[in-house]
Length: 120
Length: 111
Image (cartoon, rainbow over all chains, first blue to last red; front, side):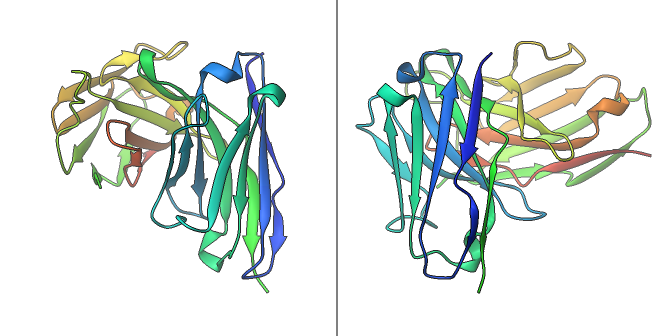
């Protein structure tokens, strides 16, 4: 079964750090590009970051640039999001989702999400 | 940055009746490779999003044929031919031509 499972969310104080993980299974992780997408409580979807299949190309939304770092370990079939200098507005459910550019399929598989709450 | 604007933001529909959602981008979504990377996603209450349509009009695996997508350039439409109870949720358009951007979402609910 094709699956993405996020973990690492929790309660963190403003200014703190957190590392999210996304474990992939049931498909060849190393050929897929990956994204992090977040959804604040009661709000819409916001794209956060993208990483290419090799990890050589990375993009961030302006709202997280300089604070968040995306990475991947293809040997471990895992995607990561290192979040630092966290703010209240980073409170959200964080999803990982895969892309396969050459097919035109973007975000065709999503995880269930992990919740990050930034509060004192 | 490309901005995606959806209308309406809320769509009360009678069961069995059609529904239509529009999505407009702030610039053309035609990529330099000739493709237009416009997708539609559905998010049912309490669930992660699910891909419905990709490249404007291609239904993703397992998506019922009552869902259809159309459009070109900057203007796109998602249509549900006959709304069923399981279609309740929020629908998002998303562009992947230049980074990724989602529309604000359109809530489809039963009258």
